[in-house]
Image 1 (cartoon, one colour):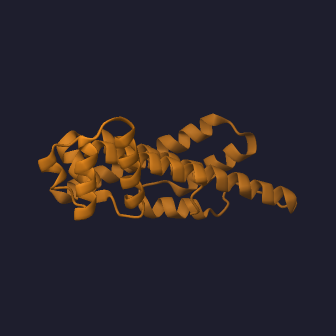
Image 2 (cartoon, helix red, strand yellow):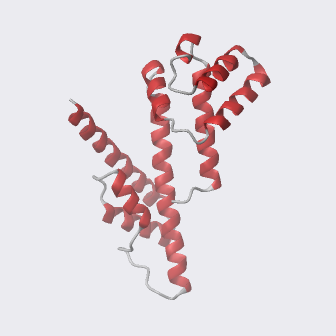
Image 3 (cartoon, helix red, strand yellow):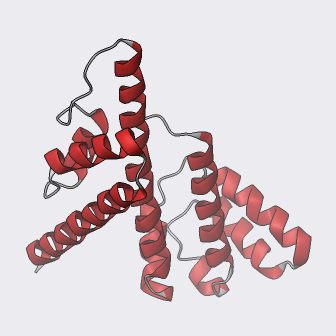
Length: 182
């Protein structure tokens, strides 16, 4: 899936918020962060700064972390500061999936109109296949049908229903994962 510029900016902003949270930790916890030593030193320096200097340091650290896997850091911060940060990330991920599906459906509808071909309710979706891979409990047929209905009339209730079903599938997956860990 190609990531749009606005999605890249949202992800950058989320990473920046993560760095802000890490800067707010005590020095002893910053040293325990699952990051390279160089990054931990920069975070420690940023924690001692104020105002614009701190903002520039946070942006610099964010730039350094742009291509790093951050799941361990999210896990570390969730264990220390609560789950709000992780929940916000999960919410944005679901929004991204929904928007990608709707964009694909709209594009398919435009192609079908241009080629004077019927755009049916059971169209093959690459995005739905990726969603089903991440969330096996997801009803793929319902997703393509809802996206088709949205593309035809742009009614926001279909967009909300897609999001609701994505969230429900994610919750089911979390319960299954939690049950298999015990």
